[in-house]
Length: 302
Ligand code: FAD
Image 1 (tube, rainbow, N blue to C red):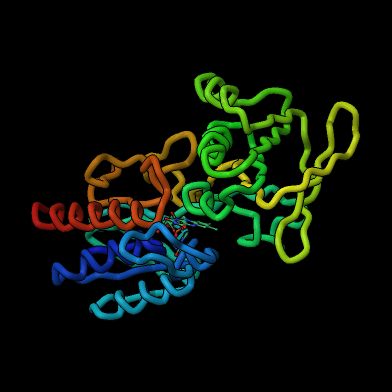
Image 2: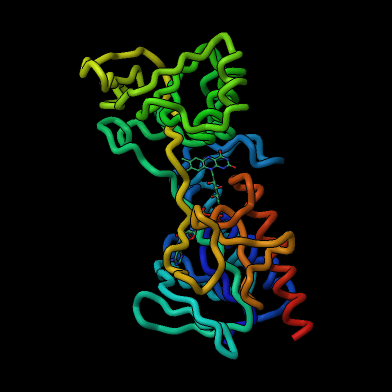
């Protein structure tokens, strides 16, 4: 059996595995896709001490760093079930069962797609999901934010300080964001909110050059010229496979305390799949280091 089994091979999983292995304990990593979300990221400019890198390059760096240690990496394997017996068992989709004294879950999350023509085509070419990451790329330009919930309105307020103009497109008749956020948004001079708007297409040639939407009341089609579209209709944690085995909140995020512990003794979690409030590379690595040190502490005490 493992001392620490990490489920997930993104920045969080890699960090947890290295921190665990440096304690000289038996460490394994199971990952559906080693590298995680950063494999889909073009440019990264906020991984502090690295001025600029590309996602696939950072993923290769993670893999190289993990290989420096005696860590069993099981790539292209999906965990399907967790069960706490005398040990913690992780059953893989292929039927194999791995046993470990402690487990760190770092299965990350995925942005919900709007699913219109142009979205996939222009990903990283004007279509973005993370205002903290990509906002500065649109300095002085016009952008749209799709989604009028808290994350959409927070994104619009954030972007309004950087870009020339922000158009918020909300499908429903009203914004769902908290009223303090709406008040703040309404106080900004360079934001337009369009409700009852169904996004139809993101247009462009090499990069995004506009967005087409349908006014749901009139059925009329409208086009806005702009350079960027931020899709903010939800971040979904990859935690369905856990069922009721570990406590999750109403968004599906694994509930952790400030030591990275879940409600199940010996099971820790870190990064985008958890209640950690902000979802970033550097944050998932930090919270995974906390989870690994907590797992080691748990092993020492049990
Ligand atoms: P993830 O990166 O999501 O990794 C999860 C891992 O778990 C993957 O290996 C996955 O395959 C695996 N997994 C999932 N389910 C299972 C399962 N059932 N069994 C086994 N393995 C499983 N952040 C920044 O800080 N700066 C940026 O510039 C930036 N830009 C971004 C751009 C884009 C387009 C996207 C999508 C995200 C961006 N982010 C950025 C966010 C950043 O990528 C995430 O915060 C970070 O990757 C989270 O790391 P994680 O390890 O928690 O999860």
